[in-house]
Amino acid sequence: MKKELDSILDKEIEKIKIDEKTFDEINKMGLEFISDLRSRIKKKNIKAEVFVGGSLAKNTMIKKDSNDLYDIDVFVRFDKKYPENKLSEFLLKLMDKNAIKVHGSRDYFQITKRNIRIEIIPVRKIKNPRLAENVTDLSYFHVNYVVNKIKKNKRLGQEIMLAKAFAYAQNCYGAESYIRGFSGYALELLICHYGTFLKFIQEISKSKERIIIDDSKFYRKKEELLMEMNESKTFSPIILVDPTFKERNALAGLSRDTFDIFKKSCTAFLTNPDSEFFIKKNVYDEIKNNKNLKIILVKTNKQKGDIAGTKSKKFFDFFSNNVKKEFIVKKAEFEYDDKKNIASFYFVVDKKEDEIIKGPPINIADHLTGFKKAHPDAFIKNNFAYAKLSHNLDFEEFLKRFLEKDKKIIKEMGIKEVRLK
Image (cartoon, rainbow, N blue to C red; front, side, top):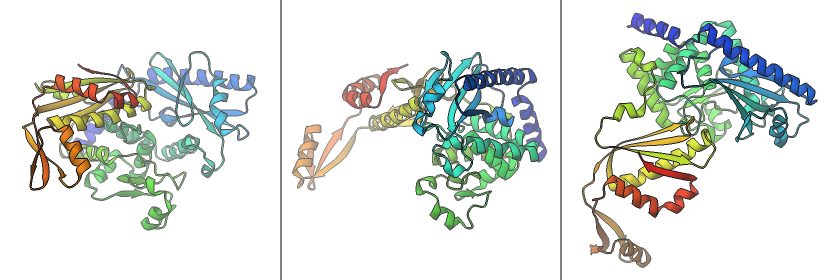
């Protein structure tokens, strides 16, 4: 089994490595952009410096599909004399007309050229992570930490690439709110901690309680950590103390659902090793032959990316709860395409049998009146109101009624289009 696993992982490394030509193209574009940006900074007499972050800086970038973009993260570190709420405005002065503003905790910019997307993020130049006013201010320290780890152990770079490729294929990669998975930095820290991708997934697969990692040994005991760290940061299945900043859990956004999916995938891969685990599965491909499959396409009026994806996911949860009232839901899946800025809801449903629902007791007059208004055929039994619900709608009619009944809520959620595919 060990030889089989090693063979699969060695082959996978060769598959996901970027070829020299592609890397040189990405690196060249990054260097040219940074050179131009530095010239603009000097010309505008702005006190700031530039550094590259992300996978390019750490040399852990993996090969993308032909439709996907390679990202270059460029950070502009502004001197402390510039006001916190003005950093994005100063960065705007350095951008050309092709830059697109992206709203966030601090607005940043994107420039896309061919299959390469450059993201330019404003941060404050600080000497101590404790002075960070925004999580992006820590990026400089994050890059240096991981780069130094890889310098000491060259193999870590490849192991990080494997972890990213595996998590991406299992739909668990990304800290966005609609994914709530593993960020790139978190995976880098996990590999730095465990040493290899294989050791990492082995530990995940056999975990039975919350995992706590504190490689900088900021805390003497688990109890001290849980007491001192903000409570909202300790709910995740893994508490990964940021080695550059003791008060930050680098996996605070990881959800239990995403962790369970990842853990299941780790166990399945270790039980039956196969290169298929590194190939991203399309939700539609897995259920497209089911005769009861219903697909809803949804668009929001929000900025594409994390904001639109998160709004779409909230609407998916709201819509799913309504579907369950009328149908037996055998499968419900959410997928967001950030390039097209459209979400797909996949439902496999069966007809629900008619049912009797229990209402309020007869001695609560207001509730009883409301129940009878909603269910004119309500009846009384043992001092409680009851009503019979008939489930005879097909999915198309259900959707039509839902959109009419809840149109105000749908509008408030920022949804501008809902249609059956």
